[in-house]
Image (cartoon, rainbow, N blue to C red; front, side, top):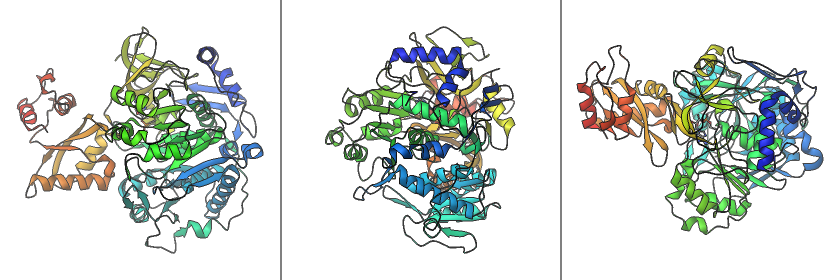
Length: 631
Ligand code: WTA
């Protein structure tokens, strides 16, 4: 690809260009895509509102760029390799030509269900090829996809469906994840019963279990799709038309629907993919994320396909049937770029090195991590055991809101330092500010991580609530996008991400607002109040620690604990279950009634001797009780 950087010197030159003249820089990159008609202004922006528009009045369809554009040269090239949950099942290979047909058929099927441009479609699916096809089918006709991770509960799914007023849900009878089976259709039925907007449920067979069937609304994927025409014209989209909504947790209230648009997201995911992973034409690239998260959107589907790459989709989990699953797949498929999360690395480290070195991992050229800070030990292990000290690690920092990788090494030529994400990609202007929003210009300092200038895949709004977008990201510091992360910039100007500075907990790379989990816990009938904080967890990065005040405790605390866990599973899903629940009679509150989380955090972190000043507490005696009962 013409926008691929090939040396560190070239990176430096490109970076300088991108800061000096961002519009020309991005216009040149955008030129390498297929536009139905060209933009007339590269950028229009104002962070106060916020209002950001890239490639203004440009018209395109992202699927033409992901698929059609490659059909001349790459029709028979494999676009997607699917690896089943079960090691003995055959891989599915979808070529660009086949993907084109499947996407067109699914797109026509959606049309036949009355879905058109601007309509929202919810995808609640296993990691099967049809999920990628469904995503692209929505984009083909201009429908806005909202993928919900198929580990969220019926309630969480219903909230997301309602918020976006989705007309259709695409799901499957069930899914396999390791040795677990989840009945997705049942969950969807329950969710849909709480919503008023769903007209149809499209169901792909996956586990072949019996499901409840409503003839009015339910349609089998396998009945509808194969009969569709294999050609579907790509809807003409404005550069700033929404491409998708993806819900993510913030520090307050319900998860918000982050909105990305067509033109800028396309340009940035393609550009960042090509450069961070240094993808060569015949490489096999594998990102282990689930498409339910942003990493799967940008770096399983869009980024790779925009570069005519071969992208692997894995249905299963890293530890089943054993902790060698990833390494076997790398050997079998001869994976060249491997992209995973620190939490997976830490979990697999505990399985020992034997199970790794049995496999031939010599195909690897780049190793990536994403989702949370990687600790020293995990970084070293990844480097030494998986990369045999030969393969570079790219520690990629970014967020659902940024759409693509912001700070990261590029393949093998950027300097590498354990636990450092490194330098910003061209076009990205990060900075550190202090509590008052004053920029910290010197190196060797820590601060709050902000971005000063728009990049093409910055979020445009939060669905249905633009004010919230402004308040959450653009109001803390004037004229800047605030990430919610703290970072350090060392004397070489490299960034190291420290972690969230707001009330967001990052569990195994998944974000939860403390308020969100508290709201769920408070749904248990005998819970009066709760406060949730994060604490360091060996595998998950952060664990969830809940302090709970109960009334009418059932017969014992164990029952209360189970009831709370069940409630959280019902309200959010198993991924948000607290690791520790401590029952307390009171919470440390200031005279104005604010919970002093700092104290709860210190206790949860096992540092009750570092509480600092507690003189402003209404009742300091609760603190000694909490310390005594700490888990
Ligand atoms: C954290 C995932 C340290 C960070 C792409 C951010 C990281 C949040 C890294 C976004 C990294 C992500 N090093 N921390 N390489 N990557 N984070 O929206 O706190 O699921 O704000 O996007 O994950 O999580 P999200």
